[in-house]
Image (cartoon, rainbow, N blue to C red):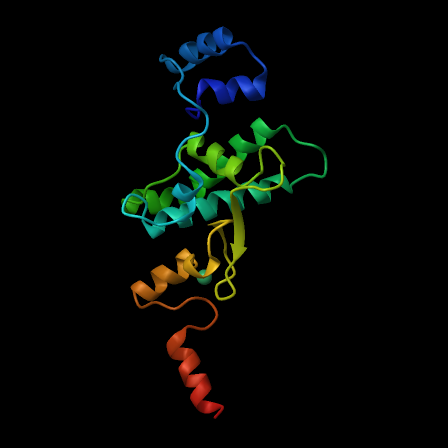
Length: 184
Ligand SMILES: [Zn+2]
């Protein structure tokens, strides 16, 4: 019902390709989206570009936070397909207001799956292409490309705050300057 690609549903349900198509058509009156489960590149989820504004990186950070929290709701092993769907639904409800009032682009469930895979959540293998870094300023965790210079991958929230002249939660340049002046 969330619009996942047929291959992702097959992977988590162990149902055959034919069976997934049949059930999908019965439920949604259309064939499941086809194509490879991995789309885009790791950079697509972490490095702002013309196609992916800074807001996109924030969306990725929000979804990853949803997934991580959802995975901690129980110490019992949880089916990963269920976890993906539960995290995705909580991400949708968290971002609903923003989505309705702005033109912000949200992840679809297939992008969410690819993002988790690039972060190593789906395979648990080491050497994931994306890692999460905690911003020392506002404390959010955001995805960064593991083998690229961290200095060139600033926190998306602080980047937006700086752009719009806002303040992050703990200190920003003008306040730091004031503090520095007072302590001289
Ligand atoms: Zn920050």
